[in-house]
Each structure stands twice: as structure tokens, then as C-alpha cells.
Image (cartoon, rainbow over all chains, first blue to last red; front, side):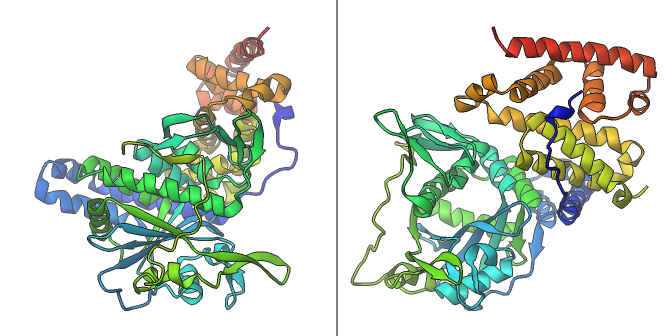
Length: 341
Length: 151
């Protein structure tokens, strides 16, 4: 009766991905059900909160990643990669530098940045945490101490778990490919799906004052600028989480289902880093300066000649003294963090 | 039977159900992958009735995804001109409002295409009862379509 609604092309399932995810779910279920009785009574006892975290910690998928040994002087670089469902590509690559007493510094790495040694874009290097860490070290000279990869449903779940993101939308925006459809609002609350559609928008259209839809001209740099604003909003929400054990439990469940962490990043360590960020309260974002280039048949990006000024703080150096605040010319975007937050 | 031997059959059901509801390859593929992963995680428990289980979970995941879409603006315009989209709206509306037994039959018989005998076994009832429930369920879907289609 409903055959006319079927997909004429057909679909091939990814068996490996199914089994990998199924194993992860099975592991999580085992850990949770094994400890459930104990956990319920344990939550009531403050000191045993550590045991609770340990069980959650065990449910998170980890990989061993070799990271450059020397920690920077007091600063820790955490690499975040937003990966597509099957882990073949990193669409969002961010290095966050955490240092007590200083604003969180966030560096967006363009996914089309070319790695001459690996002969591939950063997006493809992101197919595994180790190869991405190595590529960032080689191409940008930035040492990475911890890695977190999160898949797209994980980003949606994270935003929903945080109660949504508060953003000010100045003009109507839509992107048919990513499913984005936002109307202007002084302070809108975006749920996980909206937030994902926003960060994935590569064919953005904006409604001008003349009420006509026009393609956004800012391209991938614009996408990263929007990503920076979304990142600020996410950090703000995370900082507001506080020590509520149920909230932390739900967040760690999102990690267990969707994230991969390096094996030295325990939940305790992650929470400690989070507290440092929450205490500083401010976020400074940058984008790796890059210029279009061609390698073989691929149109990609190369590091711009003046990239060092932006990269130095992440390498452990101080920002260049001749240009204390080297910022890229701001690409105006029709979104911003909410006023008054 | 092992998960591996059943994999292709279950994948086909999950994708068919998801695509008939969502009408989009990527969305349907995501739902199907997630459904299969959950089936893998619970295999020992569901191995005896894997097909109805997969059909039910795929339906639930697809509807959850549909609800999050909140059709508005360009999507509603499209619906009025595209009979397939209209029909999907009708199916989703019916699924959310049908009494439990009729919904089960709609899912197993018309979304998953399971044979009447298998549907009867899954519901613990007779083939005759399945036929009756089917009539009522499809009548309801048509009624929903009439409402969604507007004047």
C-alpha cells in the first residue's frame, strides 16, 4: 500500500558502525545495570559521589593517544573534533587552551587546511584522534594534551541536555541543506537540532531588510565565525551547570554514548578543566589565518604568512608584542550571544 | 539465529519504515543505523521477535525525529504541493492518534510490510483480527490525510 513512498535508490547499511555503536551501548548498559542498586543508595551519600563518577567514567569510550610530552607552562590544550556519524571526517576542529585565571582561548582550525606531509585536509586527518593530533602538531606547531571527539547526535544531545543555547538572531536565516530555519529574536533558545543545523550551515541564506533572501557571502570563514559564537554559548551553559550530580550524570551519559576521549582525560580531570573555565568566565576565539591554495586537483587552504601571531599563544608563546590583539577582521554574522548574559 | 544472519533482513525493515515516514535518505539511514545498533545491544532479549521489535523502534525514532523538525515556513508550502509529503504527514498524525492495536498493525503491516501471519503472531492474535484492524487503521490514515490536505 505504501510502496510508492519507498526510496527508489536503496541503501547499504554500515555494518561496522552498527556493531561499534551496539558494543558501546551494550557496555554502557552493563555498567549502569550492574551498579544501579548500589548507585541509588550511594547518591544519597556525598562522599560516595566519587564512586558514582567512577562508574560513569568506565562507560566512556577511550583511545590511547600519544600527545607531545611537555605541558605548556600552566596551560592545557584540549582538542575538540566534531566528527560525522561514521567517524570518517572531522567537520569542526577546535583547540581550546585552558589556563587558570585567563579567558578560555579557542582556536578554530579550517577543515580544508592542507597538511603537506599527510597529503590531506585537516578534515580527513580527523578520521582518527591520533592522526588529527599529529597533523595539528605538524602543520600548526601546536601541542595537544587531550582529545575529545563528539559525533553530531552527541552535539544535539549535549545542547538539549544543557536546556538549549541562548542566542540573539538579528535576521531570518535558513539553510535548506542543513535544515536551518530561524526567525529574528532578541534572545532565542535553540534546541539541539537547531544548533546543529546552524553550525553545519554551508549554504546559508539571510533575509535582508528588503525582505529578500540572499546567499551568505562569508563562506567557510563565516561558518567558523558562527561556530565561535555557538561555542561561546555552549561554554556559558556548561559553566552554569554547577555541581548538581544529576546534571553531571546526564552529561556524562551523553559522553558515554557519543564521545571518544583520550585515556588520560578522566571525568575528574574534565570537570576540573571545566571548573577552571567557569571561574574565568570569558572566552576569546580566533580562527587560523589561511589563504586559498591548490594542491593537485584539490582547492584547499594554506596557512597565511602572518598566521604565527594567532598561533603563538597556543604553542606556548606569548601573543606577538607588536600586535597585542591581532584579530581577523570581524565577519559580521546575524547571530550573537544574548544581551545581558 | 545470530545477529549477523539476520542483519540484512533487519536493516531492510528499519530503513523501509524510517524512509516511509521521513522521506529523506540521510535521516532514514541515521534512524536505521541507530535501530540496528540498539538491536545488537539487546540481541539476546529480542532474538525471538526481532522483526516487530526493529519495526517498532525504527518507527519511534523516526517519529521523534519528525517532531523535532517542526515543519514551518518553506516545508509547509512544500507539503501542500507534494502528495507524498502530505501522505507522510497523514501517516505520522495517524500513528500518534490510533489506538494501540491499530497502530501496531499500521507499523507492522504497512510500514514494515510484514506478512499478515507474522503480524498476527507478533500481536498474539488471529489473521482475521489482523485484517479487521488493518481496515480500521487505513481508514484512519485516509481520514487524517483528508484533514491535513485542508480544503
